[in-house]
Image (cartoon, rainbow, N blue to C red; front, side, top):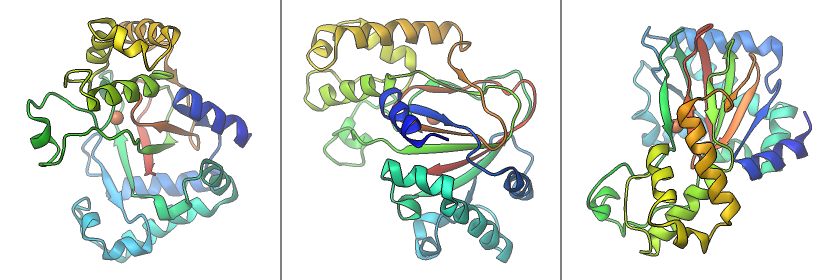
Length: 269
Ligand SMILES: [Fe+2]
């Protein structure tokens, strides 16, 4: 793994694939853990403790719906200890994520083999259509955050491309959010890629030109429309042990796991 290349790609495109982040001998342990808590419901999130300190954090408990057993602590310890492995640690250090101290969550889910997409093109933590921004943000000012959450998806059982990401789209989303905060762009839904493409193509194109290059806007419109027609060019191929790190303000999609079930562990930074 060439760390510098991975970091540069992540910063420019909003995502990167890290081959072989998890050592082969540890992959089966990850699978064993995911299976231990799997309820048989496709895509159900199973949360783990993300650090020993989190044991005292009540916010963690609202994510943990299963009995808290010594095994769960043991499994959580294994998942946390992975972040100290040299490859994992150098990645997180180079990106400046501050190791386990900045992990807010670790979870896993199993997607069963299926022809159905897991979720359509969207960005995370976006505005979906609330009519009163202040209410939507819990009585705060209604300012949209410009800070992303870095999500690391570790694939431990997997045969085909399943996660798709629209390169560079995080920058366009951030630009839209800035203009919404300044009152220049009206507060409209941008949760779905189609909505964001319509917004960029439409009445706010000229305003966006003040904060983005014409080239980047055109690229977003073209690649966004292409992605909505077909995921083909955007699917990221991974094998067991590979990981995808992405900025969650960029648009992404859970394409159908057609060849095998898919088991993913997510580390949120
Ligand atoms: Fe998402």
